[in-house]
Image 1: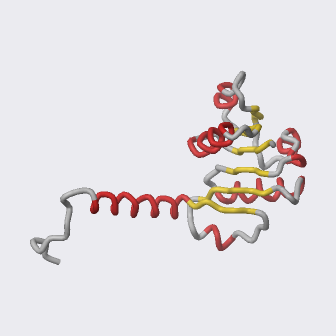
Image 2: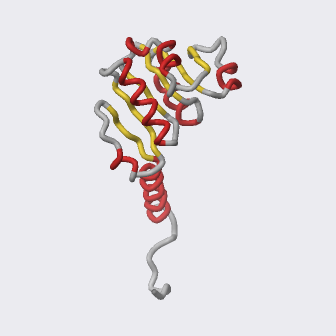
Length: 146
């Protein structure tokens, strides 16, 4: 099965690595020519271009893709990519990234799961705080005045 990943920064790389380990065919679309060049001869197929453009998504044969991952943090761009992708393949499942939780309120798109940086950062922050408090001498003390 083929998965299309839009954007090959740290988030796209992590997604690609996970999918390759599970024997998925990965195709990356990115606007950075150096990124695309670095993928030559790799197990990852690559297309240089802007995924908001229908002809770029057509090159990816999106009509035969069941899952698309959009790692672009700018939600207005993400929405444009989603609309273009759904025009080509209304059944493609999409996982998209956004910076802000407020973007969820603007999103009325079907077959789209959203990952929010703000939410993920909050969860990670609490996880680290919990770990630090449980595994160190930072204990609640009566010496601190509120």
